[in-house]
Image (cartoon, rainbow, N blue to C red):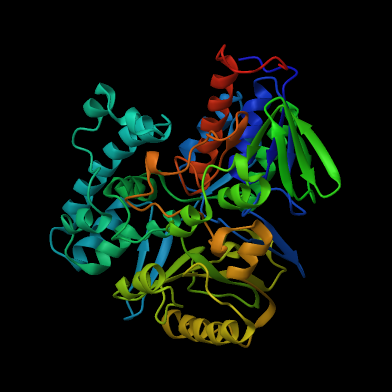
Amino acid sequence: MDMVDTSVVVVGSGFGGLSTACYLADAGADVTVLEKNEQLGGRASRLEADGFRFDMGPSWYLMPDVFERFFGHFDRSPTDYYELTHLDPHYRIFFKDGDRVDVRPDMEHNRAVFEEYEPGAGDALDDYLRRAEKNYGVGMEEFVYTDRNRFRDYVSWDVVKNARGLSLLGSMQDHVEKFFDHPKLQQIMQYTLVFLGGSPHNTPALYNLMSHVDFNLGVHYPEGGLGGVVDGIAELGSELGVEYRTDHEVTAITGHEGDFLVHSGDRRTPADLVVSDADYAHTEQNLLPAEHRQYDADYWESRTYAPSAFLLYLGVEGDVDPLAHHTLVLPTDWDRHFHQIFDEGEWPDDPAYYLCVPSETDDDVAPEGYSNLFVLVPVAPGLDDGPEQRERYREMILADVAENTGVDLRDRIAFEEQFSVSEFADRYNSMRGTALGLAHTLRQTGPMRPGHRSSAVDGLYFTGSYTTPGIGVPMCLISGEHTADAVLDDVDRPHRRLSWS
């Protein structure tokens, strides 16, 4: 569809906004991206100080096929913009009872690890991954790349035919228990739920497809980190004609299709169409006039949000062996951790957490003789994270790292910055300070997530993690495609009021 002479403003430059901008510019639209902060990327911001460079948000490069598909749409390849390193191990797990497990590209190694914990678990792993691969193939094609964002989209022969045998119902916990009895093996198969903002008990079993991503597709590190991916997509957008404006916080969206005004303080940017990649709840409640809102405050208050996070960005003197690039520290029973996040809304007292050490792979992220790492602890959204609470939690986490990994960071910290609930709310206008958006619960998946089209005002669209297909960098890239498809479909419908195009 040719959209020449159609102006589009994209509010926010997360992966969903960057993706939408590329697709619409490629279709001929005049696209301007307005970003609140000083750099592009949304939650994929970078922190640079004292010779250290940190990915502040997402740090796992998963589902490489999604990136290949995205760039391929524009007759490009990811390698036109950044190189990839296949990590080995994919990640290392320190269990808090002293066990240590590496998940590696070598499947014989992984089968042996599983067999050590439970006789027959090596074969069970093969069976599980065969099921996960099938779910991935069908699930991606039928439920991710195909935007089934309405209930009626699921009542079709294609869905019934292709969904046979898929694990669509029940929770991940129910599904994993059918294959593995040992709790540590169950945890290994479910750790990716952290990236979906859910728990084993409230995430649909369909997401076992993430194990195919993990074990079969592998874990990679992009040149320059996830910030390097942001740079690559932004460069692609520039090649397609997208204009980017940073330090341009949007304060209101007024007008209507063909005659929008996007307000940034005293500045006004006119647009025929508007796409919001800002926090969906913030857009609805703070940027739109009341008559243009689809949902009221009670709706947003009643949603289940993905966790927020307590983050420590640390520049450390010396090395941090035996930490791997991606390291998980897990209690042997993590049910309490999820219960405290989703049910009690408390700071977890024995948390599962993640350590990212890109200096194990990339010499450019830290000065010579130093290590770069951050500690990420999932915590409940909406928590009070005042200075006293932060200091208590900081001391607890650093002591926990020393006890359970053998790496004492406390006397070697040359640079430190914290980021938590308050910063997610302030920097990203994030509802309740969630780090990710709406959790992928059984009641917030597929058509039960907010839509790409506004039902209250023609010409207004949404993209990003609140919409389908959901949370995560690859999903947000695909969300941008869905949003662009919705725009192009609507422009192509003759009854739409498009005299301006």
